[in-house]
Image (cartoon, rainbow, N blue to C red):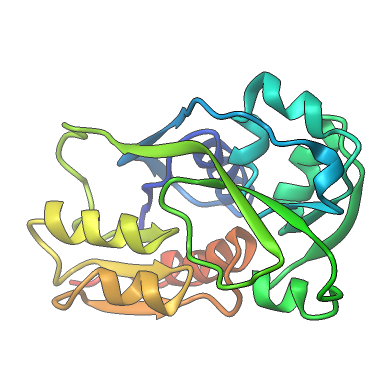
Length: 219
């Protein structure tokens, strides 16, 4: 069985590792980034109809300012984000399991949404949305050698793919599983194979990783 290399930062890293080990995988944790809170000020909650959350990090690193927004119902992308919001005391009104566009499609144009995001968020062109940056993903400057030879590497973002491309020395015996087409493209060429998850979430990504890990390692 091939090893699974996980690159994402904590706390998501711990959650992915637990899920992967439950699938019977041999996990090696190699975080390339760390999540850091940023200084921000919450706007007047009365100016908005709902809170848009696209990452659990927004709640886990949002800090004391979140208390000013507790009255707002949450529209969350992904069950992990929704669960983090519930644990923080928010009411989760709606969960989207694909992407922001799908989640917001039925939302009336008149609604005003406050998006709590990371510094390196995916741009959302929607006039209903106002945004506050509450955390950032900082590079681990010296992550050490990556034991990727003959392994399967899970890539959770395009930024992680680009960093992997920069750091990897031997690629042609390594398989990459990516959470999206953008993440796969960022990894660059030269890999043994690159596969994209059926849906852009951790569960689907790790299911794909498990399938590849249980195949024979390349000779």
